[in-house]
Image 1 (cartoon, rainbow, N blue to C red):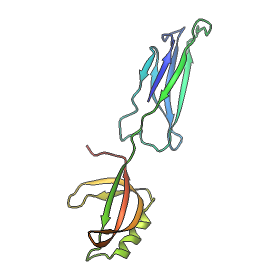
Image 2 (cartoon, rainbow, N blue to C red; image 1 turned 180 degrees about the horizontal axis):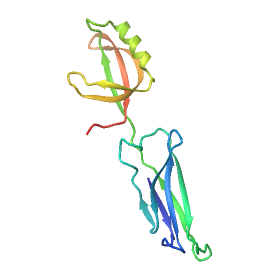
Image 3 (cartoon, rainbow, N blue to C red; image 1 turned 180 degrees about the vertical axis):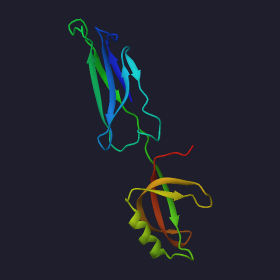
Length: 159
């Protein structure tokens, strides 16, 4: 998140300070930084995978004037507020019938998981897992075999 300002007087009794933050999904307010001088200030949001995740953000700006601040002699301006966000990775996979579960049973289970929140997914052939939301379950043909196409969205990136 960054805020571009102009004519911002230095902090102190005659100056101003600006707090920049955002309300996230549940209405939780997170202040990401305070600007006290300068014309361009870029504030990084909190560390990834803590409180910076969200689908909806409503930014807020709080301007606090010093005790002897005089708006006649100063004209601070807030020019631009910019928020950068990472989009989800879309993962496409095809599930084929197995000796343990036929295609109808697999589709039934996967459709119950569709849009049912974040689920843990295991990478085939490994012990690696990731968290994703299942957004689509479709019929498909893969290498001449009937299968189920699964579309998932993953926001986190394993280190």
